[in-house]
Structure formats: structure tokens, C-alpha cells
Image 1 (cartoon, rainbow, N blue to C red):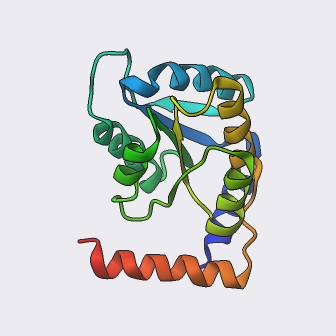
Image 2 (cartoon, rainbow, N blue to C red; image 1 turned 90 degrees about the vertical axis):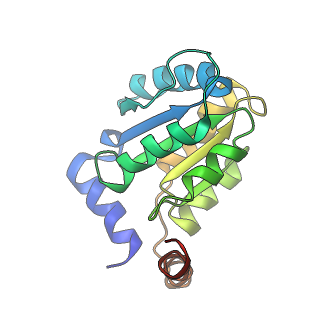
Image 3 (cartoon, rainbow, N blue to C red; image 1 turned 90 degrees about the horizontal axis):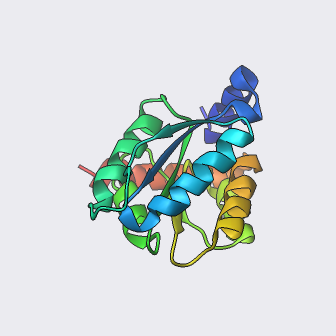
Length: 168
């Protein structure tokens, strides 16, 4: 089964706006997470808030793991993760088998990471992007389908091979 087939089965089952989105952040990303939660629910997405729930200092790997496990087990279709820069939370997310997380700060990256890499997790830096740009990035990422081109699927399969060989 190719990665693109899974995406289209999800959309046949629920429709594009019926996607279930896990949201996670540390204290640095809390306010942006709250903004995006409102933005996404107003657009018809079902959101699961994996925390954090206030601006008290916490560790981003805990929230990346919680959200990514929901994607991995199929409870959620995708996840959006936010920390101050997006770097740490994206690194943590990519340690979970089956997660392809991309850190994006612009619309082109958001579109291409779906089109070429079929990413299932998006990371954002709250200190890097403002609310309007973050919402536009998330919209672009959620609305872009995987191209399912053979060359991209081959590369994704190689990533899974690395994961199987080296992620213990």
C-alpha cells in the first residue's frame, strides 16, 4: 500500500474538513496553539488538545509524544505541534515510528511537505510566525493532498527503511 492511498481513504471516510487533528505545545507555543484550536474548529476540524494547558514551564517532548501517538494509532489523522522555534518539538516528533513531521514557516514549505513527503505532523515556531501566518500555513498544509507520485513514494519508503533499520 502506498502512502497516498491512506490519505485518500481518510478523505473518503470523513471528507477533507472531517480530519481529526491533534494539537500539542509547550509553554512557548501555548497561546498560538489556543489560537489555532479556535481557527481549526471554526473550519470544521475535530481537534484533540494534547496540552499544555497554560503557560507554566513544561517539556515539549511530552506533548509531541502524546500528539504523535494519537496519529500513530489512528485516533487522529494529523497533528500540529508548537514550541518557541518549532525545532525541538519537531525533533521529538520525528523519533516516533511512522511520524513524518516538518517544521514550516512559510506556505510553500507547507504545501510541498504534503505534496512530496506526505507529512502527518506539522511543527510551528510561535516566536517565528504570527497568528495569521500560522493559520495560513496550517490551512495550506491541511488542504494539500499527497501527490502519490512514484518518485515521492519511493523516497518515503526509503525513510521508512531507515526508520526500521535504525529507530529501535
